[in-house]
Length: 129
Ligand code: MN
Image 1 (cartoon, protein in one colour):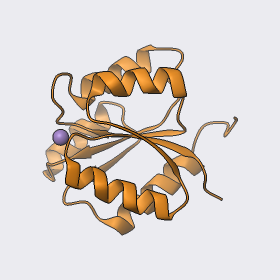
Image 2: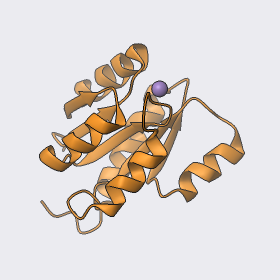
Image 3: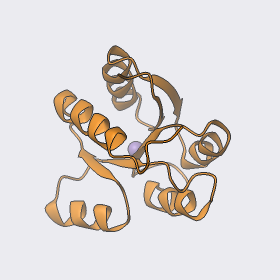
Image 4: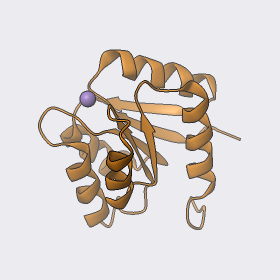
């Protein structure tokens, strides 16, 4: 059922640990980094099945990184779930409008993360490779 490869781009150690613990238990294989720049590089070279992208990152932010991913033919089909500190409804709309495939707000909920990761993976267009 699982075993898909997920790239986590998160600069906060506590959130990274939570995401790692939750996803490893479910059997996903993880790639991790703390900046958008590293995330873009890993996405291009490793082609993960899904990316969890923090919005507030040092250097390039998560929204700019999403735009880079969507511009690159090597990465444009990888679904990306935004992870953000803001739970404001306006912010959520803005983030989904930016083109993310999903949205998780901090404080992160284990139940919601696992459900959304599974649902976004299952919804991948074509489901190939
Ligand atoms: Mn952050």
